[in-house]
Amino acid sequence: QGKGKKVVKARDLWTEIIRSQIEAGMPCMLFKDACNRKSNQQNLGTIRSSNLCTEIIEYTSPTETAVCNLASIALPRYVREKGVPVESQPAKLVGSIGSKNRYFDFDKLAEVTAIITRNLNKIIDVNYYPVETAKRSNFRHRPIGIGVQGLADTFILLGMAFESPEAKQLNKDIFETIYYHALKASCDLAREVGPYETYAGSPISKGKLQQDLWSADHYDGSDVQSDVKPSGRWDWEALRENIAKNGVRNSLVVAPMPTASTSQILGNNECFEPYTTNIYHRRVLSGEFVVVNKHLLHDLTEMGLWSPALKNRIIYEEGSVQKIPEIPEDLKLIYKTVWEIKQKEIVNMAADRGHYIDQSQSMNIHMEKADFKRVSALHFYAWRKGLKTGLYYLRTRAATGAIKFTVDTTKLNVIEAAAETESEDDDKSSNGTAVAPNVSCSLKNRDECLSCGS
Image (cartoon, rainbow, N blue to C red):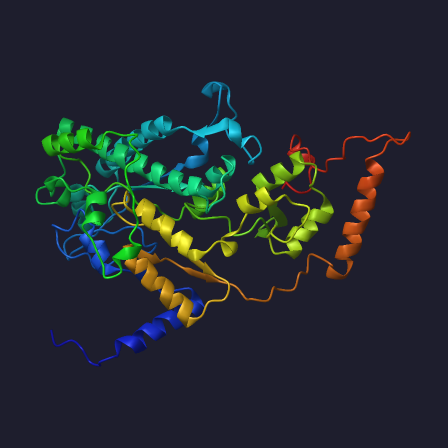
């Protein structure tokens, strides 16, 4: 078009992009071919960008401004206790102890997904639009975006390590359920009031769902493509027949977003990410206080291990429990932080659920020792896996830890030794017989607890 002023070598541009990501965490990385090949809006034209958080992949033009109509599902609320009536269960379970008696309620998730789909569709009709181009786009294509929060909490409640085969399967099953029932509810709406305006010519109008677009999309490195198959829990063939007959009311339905604010409100970890740390200091206007992973705190308290000395040790280890000998190995696996999980596994799980995500997902990458070779290799791996979003933010941290102002490292061993001596004394009554260990935090009166009363 004659607008170019300078030619830049692709390798030089690639180098500068990665250098910026290592230094500043951005720019984000999206794969344009995957975004368009796997989009149900590909009949409208070429999609040129995402939103800020890289999970909204929608068509825009000079006359249309794409709109995201979003809601997130708090996944921990669907973990149930076996044999306990739903109405008598606590609003929120905590910790991994007792996980053998728990299960994930897919039927309830399906029910709520359908309700959310209908509600988001209704919001499109009643919402206020500041510009006409946004209203035109929303009314023509009616996209919605259902996301999740607390996936890591859900794994913990069920006693699953984030990288375990069980967690990987649950990850796929959850998003299969959400995608299936969002489409089913959208199809029911289409039967009532008709499909969205630009439905004709879209992949879904031709019988192609998101998993079909993934199966048809192959790269040179297709040997690393995910092998995702339906769980058998839902009748996909019946849904395909109903869509062929009635269409769908919404062009797009699933878009896992960051959920930074709402996760704080509901007490969940963000979206589908692992925990970044198990203990940290939070600064707000009213002051500074220690925040502990509530699940870890619960488990250690139930096991009689929680103490000021152990808290100091976790702070000293920068929120990690991997080098603390008192903590059992099974808990160490469950409470790995994102820095201790291979980032290829994060990409693999994103690709697995990607088969059921018709927009995209806000995926962050965490690297302790980020360099050009590692970051570049991970980008190519994510591209070969077929992801639409290869990176939202690159999170890095120094290989050497920051100075622990909150922990006197010269006294750490003294504190631990004193705690051990105190524990031995407490374990014996006046007549020398063993008694139950003194628990520092009962979790029953949180307001009186220095660790969790903030």
